[in-house]
Amino acid sequence: MATAEEIAEAYADWQGRCNGNARLARMLRGWDRTVHLVATDTGDGFTISVAGSVLADLRHGLVDRPDLVVSATSEDFADLFWGDLNPSDKYVSGEIVLAGSSEDVLRLDAMSMVAFLDQ
Amino acid sequence: MARVDRTADVVVAGAGYAGLQAARDLVVAGLDVVVLEARDRVGGRVFTERTASGAVVDHGGQWIGPTQDRLRALAGACGVTVFPTWVTGANLEVREGEVHPFTGLIPTSDADGSADTVATLLDFDLLAQEVSPTEPWGHPRAAELDASTVAEWVAAAAETSVARSLLATATLAVFGCGPDELSLLYALAYARSGGSMSALIRTTGGAQEERFAGGAQQMAEQLAGALGDRVVLDAPVVAVEYGPDGTTVTAHRTGPERREPWRVGARRLVVAMPPATQGRIAFDPPLPGARDQLAQRAPMGSVTKVHAVYDRPFWRDAGLSGQVVADRGHLRATFDDSPVDGSHGILVGFIAGGVDRASEAAGPEGRRAACLEELSRAFGSEAARPVEFVEQRWSAEPFSRGGPVACLGPGVLTGCGASLRTPVGPVHWAGTETASVWTGYIEGALESGERAAAEVVAALGAGA
Image (cartoon, rainbow over all chains, first blue to last red; front, top):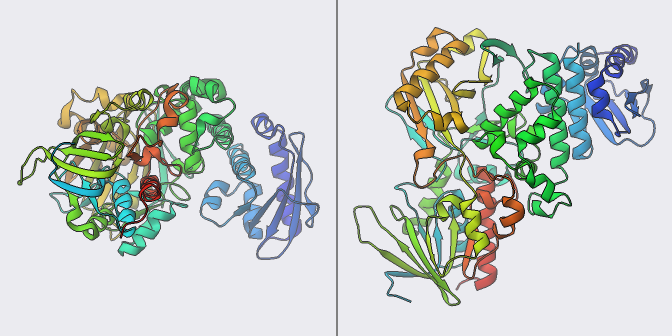
């Protein structure tokens, strides 16, 4: 189990890597979205916003109307942001659940994969 | 029309999954049906065989994945169980002669190339979301997308040679042809019909997720068993006369009860085969030009499927999944194809596209030697000594003419696509190439059979 603070710390690391990645910037062009993260074990909720190819700081709580909802254990969120797990594997095995339009799901799956590779 | 040997409401030409599904639905609707099958077996491009060493191998279609609901329901009804494709352990990427282990979907030995592959695949899949799998020629930019090959698109979209190479391998594995042979519009529609290209190339979570215990042909045999003597084997359809009143279908029976030609008169005909084999049937009167052009311009992929059978799946001991992605050589993609009980170890691989055609001269022995050398490079010297090595050369199969699917080049969908499913008088079209979902897969074959049967029932009304 990971606390909200641990997830926030891991996210900050991931955010730094994502925002410094030119290929991700290309993939995020024109894709402004609000993403909710729901930790299935602790019940914690977080909000990520993407605007102008930049990932904003993590907000605690489920804020605004989401375009995408990602459900996983708190541990998986922390591992994902630290780059310790391959998000694509977790997604296809159903341990991470993405809910949203098919385009948004494809995009989030791909961008998390690229962020994973860039470390 | 001329004297006939048998009459029926409907003739179905082809006893693959498309034809068998159509026949079943037509029988349920109360119609009198005759199924004419060219081979001495049913299943078409799905063919399970027990080899000399006792291994059960699928020479053709063999996997089932998420959203293939018709196939899953059919397997359930037939009492055939599915089990996950073996994915435990590291996959291997063979690039420029070096072997690199990786996990997940995309090889990772070159991080930038891998990221570029993911980004390019995403661009492809986002574009695919815009394309209707039913009427891809209706896309506002259809002419432009259909004027390009997949290779031309990838050359512009990808920034690295690694991405171009990996996507070429994916094309070979999925279509049995290189990206330079495929229309971009066709590939987009094809990917969209199964969800996305990512879904087609995935094992877990995609088209290769699970297998059938005992093989993928069993459901075809059960469908045929239920149809009984309505299914006539060794009866390739060679000629079709048709008009407003119906059709006379001529088969050249080649089995023990040889009596050729054998003619069946019917009110309707469902042609359930790939365009390339349909094109060998003589139609009188001739088919409309666009339909005949389609049959000429829908060549089958080139694929030889090989199985190396071992006493046990020894690669699992080394922490390997059996999956290989290679940038050159004969086998660009392999999977662990061992039975669920692990009683044998089996690796399955595909020789595809231009490599498959070029391997004609090498013959079975030459292909075997080349494949075993490549398997040894990936899995060690034990791989060089299989108990048995079998190949199924689909390119040389007269009643499939290749596999796994038709590979449409530029201009075909926009020029002739509208004739793909449009009935010609009493003649209806089925086969996975005509499917709107999972085109090229068993699921697509079943959907096409359902659709063609529904067309016939709508035209004739249900029988008594």
